[in-house]
Length: 277
Image (cartoon, rainbow, N blue to C red; front, side):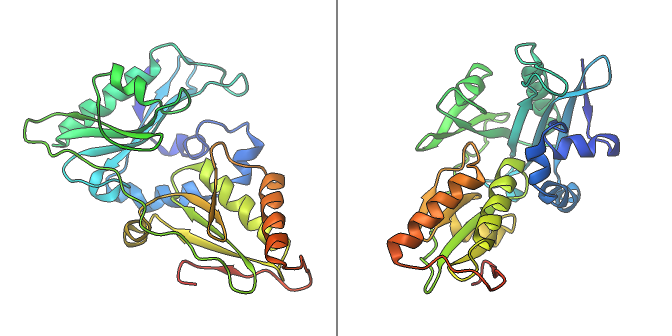
């Protein structure tokens, strides 16, 4: 196994989070490809783990804090570290030290770029991006919001401590129709999947629902909301991890329509709104 930089050869599998075999990844559209194009010239760094057969089995992506969904300067922020763990595709490669090798490569790279530290978001529960795993690699918790912890490893004594973004805004309910609002960060195909499913469901009820997409890859919009991804039906936030199915979103939307006494009419084309709606 070796650690390599992202090259054009591997862009496709990187943008599908190594899950080329997954039908769900095809549902997620091309949002990550667009995000990659926007950020390659803004300091985005990607390291890939390649096995002896030339297959990509792990990835880490990180960015200068000034461009990332975090508060602080002069450090790098990890969006995601992922080792393929499914039987499909390239198979399960967990528990082989690949995650540690990717993290070490990112740390060495960030140091070489003059970064004063490396931060990551982590979950307090034993699932993807566990904060406990980062703690075992020498990181410490510097901020917390519910189940999310911000972990950090400083490379310099004068490194400032980063902070998590704090939620500042939630969407209002729609006036004549139920409003489905989805915040999209661009870098995560799972959230892109939520976005596309929510938009599809809203389009099924053009007289009763409207869809509003919010681009939190825009820094001003990100700071205005204080969060990078979320799904709301009117002013109620839905859980998005793991991504809810089309059926689950539809059920929540119809329930809201009934509660508001809005008929689930059809007949007009759906309206896709923007963050300024």
